[in-house]
Amino acid sequence: MRRLRDTTTSFLRDLRGSLSAESCVVLTAAPALLTIERYVGRPRTFRGFTGAWTSLPWYELLPYAWWYGIAATLLFVVPAVLSWAGFRRSPAETGFRIGDPRAAWLLLPAFIAMAAVVVAVSGLPSFAAKYPLCTLAREDVRVLIVYELLYGVYFLAWEYFFRGWMLNGLARDFGSAAIWIQTLPFVIAHFGKPFPEAFGSLPAGLFLGWIAWRSESFVYGWLLHWGVAALLDVSVVLRHGM
Image (cartoon, helix red, strand yellow):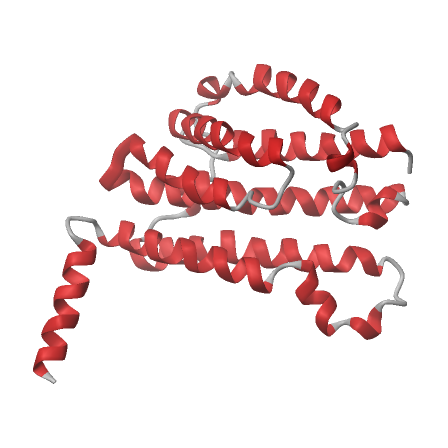
């Protein structure tokens, strides 16, 4: 029993190394939360236990409300609670604030450039077949509006998780190198998306991480990310018809 205890102690000590407790929590909780969100929060999970509801109006929207609600809980609420309960750090201290808007000025030309790319790729079959993710949003403008608002909540949680909670939670130990660390799971989370989008998530993750670091806020990156995603949906709908 003592040998097992000593081995466990050595295991935990070696894992922690010189890391702070906050970094250990972030590096442990981040993959756990992303995994749960991946397997529990996706539309197919919702459809699996609501098969009898398919006759409901706007049923096709509900799986996405489920997904984005789960994401908001696991990628925003839970990390915020962990930071507050464990380290007395408020959401504002992990990037949910105005920060320095002057440091985020590059997002404007970035949005213009990305908007041009989005409009161009919206005509590709791979994008037209995938977006908007909610097929009903391609058929009813009211559903499209509600869906895009839900999408905004999703991206708020997404940006807080990577460019707020992870970036600031790891900053004490890694400094600006935390930009690289948060980019790794961000890119992996894009696997399965069209290749241009998945590959582009690498420079996008680094760029948004750098903007969040300089401006001390993830809010500007959230607005950019949501704006580009919504523009893609609307461009596909306008180009291919509703």
